[in-house]
Image (tube, rainbow, N blue to C red):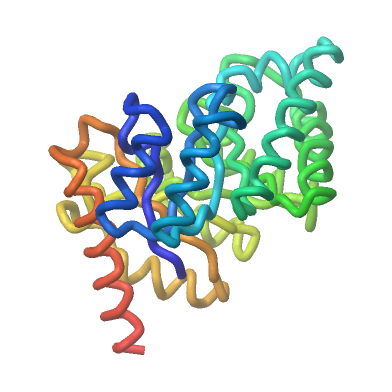
Length: 265
């Protein structure tokens, strides 16, 4: 398993600067959260690639800032908008190949949208297949304000789409949806290809690693049982930690916990 952090943790710091702050603190594995279209090419993109190369970093996943558009564009009932967003995401896939990233994180439609499941599955499948054509895995994330907040919905995706669906499990989003994290993992099994991790307790659902009471040892055991070889990406919101150094500490703490787990094994 690869331990890392997301540039989203440093928002609203500009993405290339966020990447650099993680780099100088020794974080080797990252998720890049794209916050603007001009970060997909040009000078900003060149800066990011330079940082990645200089510090020997590996990009595990990419998250689009256009997630709020997905309800209306990708899953809406106006075909031109769907084609428009599909074209945008195809460009993301091209960029991801330049970065070496393989997981594309999808939020999907919000709960209040009433998008029919049949349409949802059809549109997801289109995007998934576009990703496969470029060597990219489009993975549905569980989000508390989206249709994917429902365990039954996630199960339906898994059952209906068979081998053409993959998932990102976000621990804080599961807590905010009042879902048992291990029930989600059990339901989705080895279709889980990416994890967004944070600690949690009764005092907070998104805490730095080691400051809550989440059972990471159990998480490691369960993921080992699925032969999981993906990433565990620390994802906190800016109000959940004090300094950028805290993010590096989270990564190091998680690495120590994982090393302890493997020594036990």
